[in-house]
Image (cartoon, rainbow, N blue to C red; front, side, top):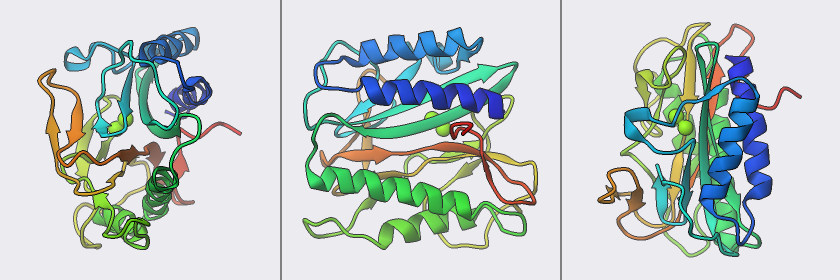
Length: 244
Ligand code: MG
Ligand code: MG
């Protein structure tokens, strides 16, 4: 799984560099598919329940599952890119949020808070703990911050993390909020994808008529960060981090 995760990690580095003003998400998708296949892996998203591409490209108020298209990215957009690969039957799944050119401070901060909450969730994934410790740590990390414009960040409840291994999506579902100390024990060898989604404004979502694209109902921008990890006696191994 570390090898599969490495394919995803190196692909996301290429995508981060390619997500510049004027680039289209379809071009990013082509870069991703080439990167994954050149590594001897298979893009797990392509054909998954009919999904047409190798990445999900979710711009601004799209939370997750955006379909790549020919719309050029614009300076100031915030895009989340979700990518998955299968290598020798094992899955990796990871997402990053990227600022296209210079973005508003509130969007940069939104992404930073979301990424920080991902790492808080990862740190909670240790033997002796329980599954809901992860979501509790994610929620606390988000609630430690507030948007400069007032109110509080939205924590998306309609989607969450999941087990991962010989399939991309396995039990259990992982909430990004809630009380600690609930749910299954976290045992060494368990592999999980942790993926907080944070919004400016209310976190309620709806799905577009294309049956994939998930947007915030209130129109606020969203960030999404994800890593696949393994629980071990020595602490979590981040399978989708760069090997270095
Ligand atoms: Mg993903
Ligand atoms: Mg996932």
